[in-house]
Length: 105
Ligand code: HEC
Image (cartoon, rainbow, N blue to C red; front, side, top):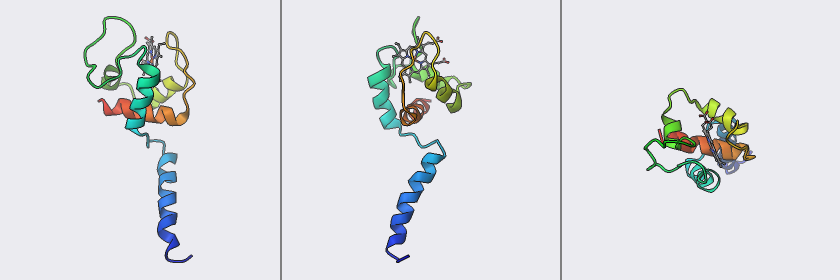
């Protein structure tokens, strides 16, 4: 290998490794998905701290539940249960959403 190709190879391989580890969601992209797909039912913004008296939990309240691990969130978002509909999210969207929800903690 030539010397000049090595940094390029490293730049290509590192993102592959980190995304294979599964914890490389992008919170900014997750926030976009949340506003587009979730805000019709959930209060998704950071400012939404207060409890709602009925209906779906705010994302911040989900984030604050200590028992809600990223793995559980992934399980739920892969196959939500009633009354929440299944939204057919991709793995990348789910990783990004988890990163966003975690960022609200
Ligand atoms: C059509 C309305 C609707 C949409 C759209 C929706 N949700 Fe929900 N979601 C609900 C309801 C209702 C619940 C409460 C479920 C329950 O009480 O068991 C819920 C619960 C949840 C929970 C908590 C699950 C738990 O175990 O407590 C999470 C996390 C969640 N939604 C994430 C999302 C995300 C992320 C999106 C967008 C990709 C989304 N929801 C879109 C209605 C919706």
